[in-house]
Length: 501
Image (cartoon, rainbow, N blue to C red; front, side):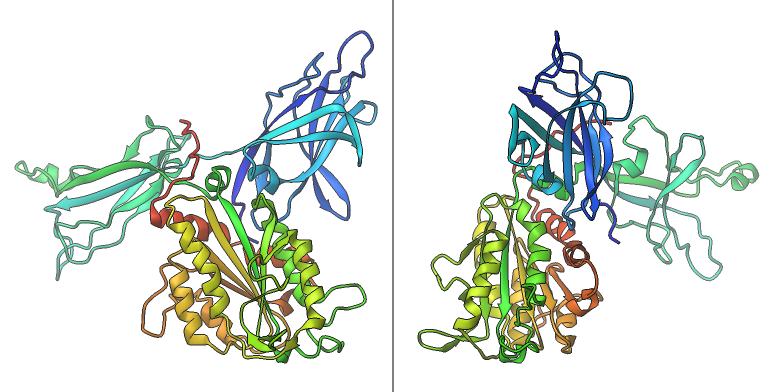
């Protein structure tokens, strides 16, 4: 399981709540619940109760763990509290909403109409929710060198390294950083390094840090009156910078653009045959559709217009019946956008009987297609748009060299590529592209600027809940997005206010 990306606190206010009290106004309280599966909800937190108010602004923040790669369904329920019991069954319900945490964090302010039940408004009542990440984003950058250190090794010079300690609440010293060892050097200059301020000193500038500036050897000092020191440590530079998180970029206005590429090569089999990977079962699904739903259901919350380009490759398409490696699923090349994930699914189902599955399996055209849009966005010089390309394929790639070059080029752009392999084929080439064990290089030896490819074989998740697939394929995206904008030196479009701890 991937670690929690962040913790966020939610601020809640309501307007025009129903009045359930006789002789006074309602005494509202808001409860936050999260879906835990099978339609069941578990309470995460609740606000304070505010007396006699139809327009409450709750002071207590609601805290929740945030995961980009999951659809986190939340329910906000507002009650009129007229007793001291923790149980809400005997309190009047003033309305509620259901949404996802992704919808909240991708909106600067999230306002919805309260409902007593689905389709029945709770009068004119509304609820407004805003999110803020709980963190200290500051990072300490240090450059340190030493001079005239003692020689400690019998046959050579010393092998010095550096350690920083912070004092914890119990008064003991805790290691926070250890440098690399520099061999045989009495005047070392260590690599510039960074430590989060929270790790370095708990965000407290007054907390002691233990670093020896003069290296004093107690025994030598006692024995030798002329002894001064065993060397001097010098801090060449100390800089405090803000390191932005994934949520800083999302809350700051970054939109995630989602594009789908579907493999229609002949190796998938005749879509009319139950043996085909494109065969749609009586319950309306196949592995391609499950992959689209799993990834798309998460990503759609981060795109305001919910318009997603969808393409096919490797098929003969009408009217010329030429093989195409970049055709719009809706047969509209000038406007390949589908309305929501359901729109992609509908276009996929409609196109299946209208094309002829053929080949070969070429990835580079669709990667280059999305890269052109990412390059145009990058020219703006702002962290406003990031692109995710989902490729679903059944087999070995034909244009491996061209695809390697396309990925290396795309690694310099605001873009990530997810490849889901369906069926039982050998996916060695896909694993080669997803170089978790090293840097992908083009045929000419040019290395990728960063790792942007995530490959997973669908067969590993065949019997698992759909959310497990999305969790695995999307877990790397926040790190990839942040690494790109950090590499470019671009802050969020609307940077967060820096709060001292």
